Length: 74
Image (cartoon, rainbow, N blue to C red):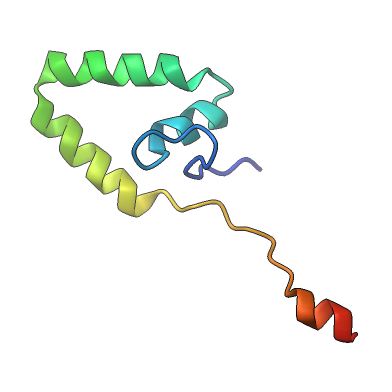
């Protein structure tokens, strides 16, 4: 099952639109252009509020972190 995460590679501000592009397998630039057009068509305030809400709702991608000192001692 696919999950939506903020992008670490296609990040401009917080990686939200890059993550949406990765989720739908679309170039993130197309998503950004669409959202900028939508922002100016509807007014900037709804776009800013939606982006801030998405910043708190969309999680960062979890990293598989292995503690090197633990791995050496085992």
